[in-house]
Length: 439
Image (cartoon, rainbow, N blue to C red; front, side, top):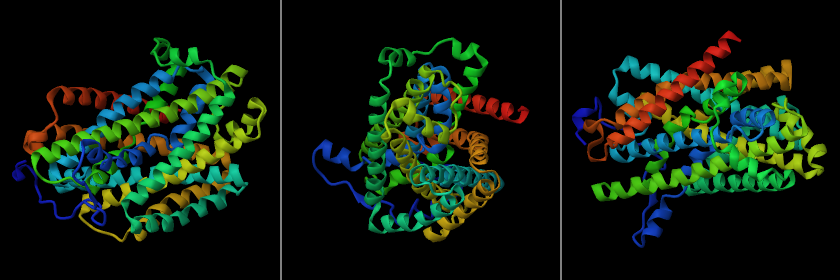
């Protein structure tokens, strides 16, 4: 890598308190590969956050299993983009925020920083609402109180980070395990048509020709690739002390890509399970209009015939919200430190980010109740759609640069595929935004 390709030197390590903190001990290939397992699951959290739930429930209840193909295609796109994040981190020692600051003039960098911060706040807003709804469904906590309670997770995050980054990963993976068990039990109760499920993974022309189905398909795709995940992954990959030689970095890239690919396939399983559950429980019983999380929770018991089903739904939503707040916090730290080269105490950064999300969430829940939070959730996804091109395009262009990436530059064929994916995602998100503006 030629340093002249960058405008500035990398002065501050990404997530400096945990950077290169996890040793890669010598031994078998399996042992070295195991040391890289973890960051991918933090990334996977963003692909099953509360913002994704509404689109999956609406798609499954209205069209059955037909939109499973969209979930699969979206996931393949995500796998490729996240592999570029790992490549950028390993090749340059920079996260995406640092790379943008180094590669672009200051005015451009500041605009990208502002948009990234806006995306972080929108992400955190979705997590606040999702966690509050989960508390409400499980423990009957009023939504406005649940929103305030979510601010307390700052202490949990700080405690885990003080123990070490592996503890953060363990916490995330444990909650993901709970989510998987909850959905596994609910799917068994719903007893879906497995032949229909398999058929649903094959794309059909109806997705394009049916405007309503296309809109939901765009919603699923638009809510899948999250801007903050691109910043997050390029930072947390560097928690591994993988060495600086080319063979060591090639191995680190291979294992980091394997980690994120496996984790994102797990995320696909969860998202597909949610869509399958909605299809089996609602679509095949004639309830094709279900789109609200609270409404879906209420109807699970009479439809599936078990009191445990809605409890499992609420528990998985709560775990999903808690997980997402942890990863959004780290993404916020990476964005602020990377773009403006300014280090802020994690607890202060957390409180500021959470405060910005809590104020509108609390105001809307107090004024309008659950219906208002649903609209706010949709608005947060639109904001994320707006910001997405400003994260994806720099990622694809920088990883394609031999001058910036050196020997680990993205192969031309992969750059072409990533470019097509970026163009498709940007076009679809623009369409979502236009549809939102035009009502």
